[in-house]
Length: 75
Image (tube, rainbow, N blue to C red):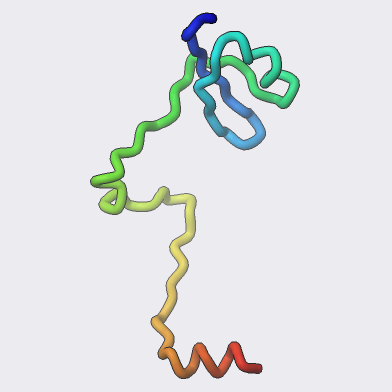
C-alpha cells in the first residue's frame, strides 16, 4: 500500500483534505477534487494576533452581569 497523498479541495465549502491517492475516487463522489492549492497554515501561537479578515464583521458585545444573565434564563 502506498503512503502517497494528494490535496483535495471541496469547492462548495473551500475545505481542504490531504487524502491517500487510493481514496481520491471515493472522495470525488462526494464533491472533492484534486488540487495544487494548499490550505493556509495557521500558527496557533500567533493566530490571536492576526486581525480578522475585512469581509468578516466583528460583533461588538458588552459583558453581562451574572445576575442579569441568570434572570434571562429563568423566564
